[in-house]
Image (cartoon, rainbow, N blue to C red; front, side):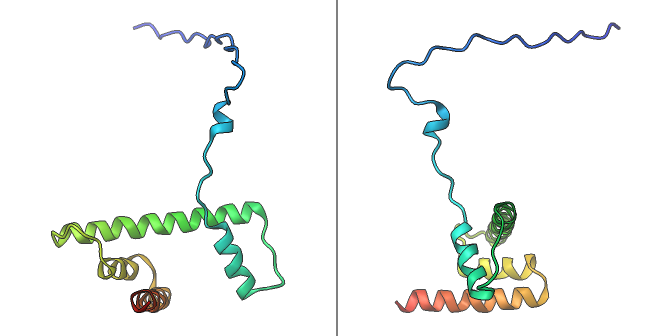
Length: 121
C-alpha cells in the first residue's frame, strides 16, 4: 500500500474589495464578557490592586467555565426529574454538586439573597 502524498495548499488570489464594503473583521460583533464585573469586585476587595489583561482573560474564562458547568448540571437535574424548566432549585442543587464545601455554602447563601431581593422588588 503506497503512502498518499501531500501537496501544499494553493493560495487563491485575493478578491478585490468593493467600495463601501466592510471586511469580516470590521463586522465582528462584540462578545459579552464579565470584565467590568470582575474589576468592580476586585476594587471592593482590594482597592489598591490592579489586574493585567491576561489575568482578566483568565478570570473571564474561569467564570464562563463555571457558568457552563452549572448550566449543564442544572439541565441534567431538570431532565432527571422530567421537568421542562430549570428553576432556582435546580441551580441551587447544581451549585452544591459543582462547587466544593464552604464555597458552595457561600454561593447558595448569596444566590438565595439575590433571588429574595429580585422577587421582593
